[in-house]
Image (cartoon, one colour):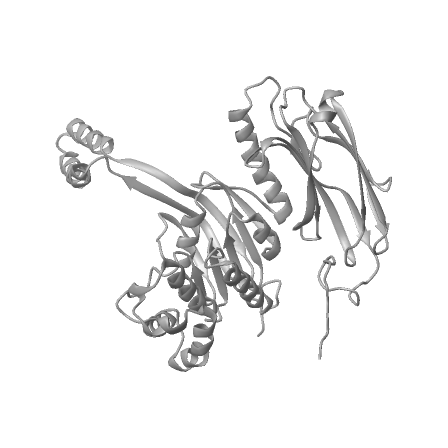
Length: 428
C-alpha cells in the first residue's frame, strides 16, 4: 500500500532534543567528581547527611553549559529549512546531532534516507593518502557501493578541479584544495538529505558559483535540505522556510523573509542598545520592518501608489518621506530593489546630511526606468548613520511596503532580471 504525501513520515523528525556539556575547572575535578559521587552513594544509607555533603562537594566541581534544549521540529521530504541565529545559539551543535556526529543528551532524532553532511569539510580525510584514495574511502563511508563510486568518480575529480594534486597525498594540499575535494565528494553522493553548515564559502569565487549551482541541482531532484549560514541571501534563495535559534531554543519558525527580519531586528536592537546611549533609542517593530520611531521612512509611494504596475522600461518615480534625528551625525538612506525571493538586485546610498540641516523630515524623489524582466519587485530601505562605508549603523530597516510589477516578457531582449550594457561584435 502506498503512503499518501500528506501522511508520509518526514525526512527528519527531532523530538525534545537537548545537549548539555560538562565543564571542568581542572583535570583533577574531572577525576574526583565520579569518585565523590560513588562515595556519596555508598554512604547514603549509613550517613545520609555525610552523603549529601559529599554529593554537594561533587556538584561544586561540575559546571554545565546547555547548548540546546527542547528542540522539536519535523522536515518533510523535498523541503528546505534554513536555520539562523547568532554565534553560540546552537546551530552547528544541532546539525551535528542530526547528522549523527554527536549524541544528544536528551531526546531523539529520526532520519529517513541517506545523509550527506557538509559540516567540517575535510575532517575525515587521511592526510597520508592521495586525493583519489580519499575519494573512494569517503564515498564508501557515505554508503556508496563500488559500482556507484566508479560511476561518479570522474565527476568528483572534475568538480574538485585540483589538477594533478589528485594523485598527491592530502597533506600536500592547501586548506582550500582539501575543502573543495571534500565538498565535491559530498555533493556527488546523491543524498536524500543534505545538511550544510557554512560550507558554501569554500574556494574562490568561481568555485563558490559552481557550488551554489550544484546545490540548486540537488534540490531540483527533491533532496531535503537543512541549511545553516550567515549568508541570509542564500537562506532566501534555497529555503522554503526558516527557523530562528536563540540560546539553544527555537524562538520562531516561518517564511524566510519573516524569520530573517526578526533575526535582524533582534541583532540591531542589541547593537543600538550598546552603541546609541541616548534617550528613546528603543528599536520598535513596524508592519514592514523595524527601527527607531523617529528615524525611519514614515511614508512612501511608487508612481503615487503602494504597488505600481508598469511595462518594460516605463518610468518609475519613488517618493519617500524620511524622519531623521538631530543626533545623527552622518544620516543616509540606502534604497534597494529586491526580486521576488527577496534577493538584492541593485540600489543606491543617498547621503542626507544637507536634508537634516533643514529639519527633522526629508522628502526624497528617485526616478528610474523599469528595465527589469517580467515579475514583481520590492523596495527595501535602510536609514543609517554612516560616517564611512565601514562604519555604518542601521537605524531602521523596512521592506515590502512598496512594490512594482513589470508585466512585459522581455526575454527576447536580454536574459536574467535586468539588462547590462554590452558591446557585441560578431566576426568571421
